[in-house]
Image (cartoon, rainbow, N blue to C red; front, side):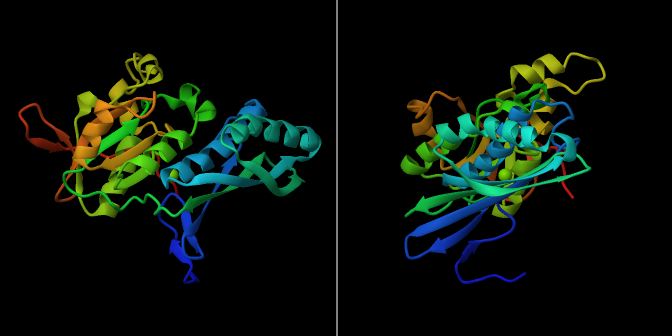
Length: 292
Ligand SMILES: [Mg+2]
């Protein structure tokens, strides 16, 4: 893989970071959604458009970058191409407007297959360092925004990427590491712990479980609500490693309405653990959505 001197962060984090002169940095991320994989055939196209932009803004938020623009490429079914393109892009507009993201271009083509959408989002860091996955240190508190699990109930399409919260936190607080939860709390936490070279210990009873996870859970063959919160994925909440003093300040004076919950801590060693009632710890099985 060719790299250049301006590449600060390459493959392996939520987005790439490039130097633009002495103080500015460009943050770039790209996500591809395919019908039948990331959304079901028949899903309203504006919702699909919203999701395609939102997953990218979530990755920018995980780096604490301010979104600037997105380019959108669509591979559409032959018969309804123009109509579908309009519906997808219309679905992006409210989110783009809320976060001041210019839809700056892209490409469209049609073919005989299913709908495929690729969005590349560009963000900037003015004079700040990006959040990364690898900065957690033993003793850091694990914080998570919002609530987790059951996103298949609808949140995976309609979620709000945590851009506002990320910018607020990055501007005013020391945050050691961050990731957005795309593939499940336990799996994304494991990625963060591994990248940071430390262990993570979860207080399972502290994990904020979504109403959707609770309402999906009752069927006997179904996962428990807690298991859903740990492994369903597509929550697109922020998972943060924060110095204990900073976590105390955040708890005393929350900087925004969205809940920010302490769910455990990083520790020396390796692996993902759950805190036992007696104060000891037991290994936690890491589950989630594994890509290729
Ligand atoms: Mg991500």
